[in-house]
Image (cartoon, rainbow, N blue to C red; front, side, top):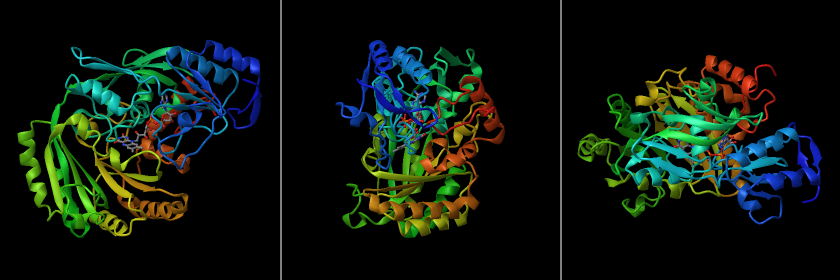
Length: 476
Ligand SMILES: Cc1cc2nc3c(=O)[nH]c(=O)nc-3n(C[C@H](O)[C@H](O)[C@H](O)COP(=O)(O)OP(=O)(O)OC[C@H]3O[C@@H](n4cnc5c(N)ncnc54)[C@H](O)[C@@H]3O)c2cc1C
């Protein structure tokens, strides 16, 4: 490899000499890729097609030693650095233009200790990798709802999904992590080792180092669970959502019901004339005994007169993939997100109004129900501190062509602004798009934000890890 033009940490271009590249490559066991190499485009491509960036160099790590060498190389050469886990982050922070990207996707091992109910998970593992291995033993931990998401980024921001009401956020089930720090040390973080760092990585994103192994607690789940969808016409949404809001007040932790408002997909259990019609969908997962779940779910079927419904027992791992067809990579996606502690009538009216003129057939607004065990943890226990978020609402703008960007983005921003008075003011850090760098503090309680800045000053004072929802070190 000849000399290479590459961006420095501050963004100015510099030249990396052939010999320093050669020395790095000689000690690195994975592949090092530049533009034109086989695999370069695959490695730089992420879930959100709106992000199209070209790193000058990509290092595909095969293990912790590779990660340490790559961090040393980035620091010693003052390089702009990005880290790719599952590549799902909407803001595209996994990839940097003109800089140095460490791609962790090949470090995707999952080792389950069924006796101890623990799993060691590599930073390149997808949710499907984790669920598959854990479910082989009838075990699971709370993760998200789209199986191609990376375990790493999801966990570092907090992580929630169908099991969070019962077992808490993903971070509430993290037992330890191995981390390569900005100064190239390999440290372990847990309640007893570097507890400050352990607190920070449980919600503070990739600000404090690169995690090379996550150790999680597991629980018996399924393997069959009662799940399904009830799909109502949008015309009934006000009534349905008011009844849903009431039901949430007494909902047991075993039950989780998300609300999705969108055009009805062509699902086999829906009559053909409902396909493409605006709908309010209750997406349901009961993590306990299916017979008990059926009794709780039954009344929801008469929240209105549904277009159709399908509730049944299926393997938990299948349900974890049920939404994948609506969330395939390669589309253009723009998100706006609010946390809600209550669903006021005015908020319901607004959602109904905006869903009646969706900018594209793939766009949706969803309310992901959290609460339960996730809300019983003290807000200062982990950096993920929005424990009052009963719903994380995401305006998920999604379309196919760049020509649709303007209309879709304007629609999402308008709804977001109009809904702000009814939301908590907080946001889930993992749902923030690239134009929200000024809003990162809103993802944390004020005292937690201050503590995170101090922690950043301790563990990454020069802000080497800056391609993320960035926390500036206190001193800068
Ligand atoms: C379709 C879809 C559905 C989703 N559903 C849910 C959901 O149900 N629940 C939920 O909680 N979230 C959900 N999310 C949000 C998801 O948690 C974030 O997008 C998350 O950032 C994805 O992690 P990743 O590893 O795939 O992403 P990446 O883009 O690879 O990484 C995200 C960030 O983490 C950093 N990072 C990655 N790996 C490491 C590491 N090992 N060490 C240090 N830093 C690292 C990256 O630099 C980047 O800043 C969803 C996202 C999508 C696109």
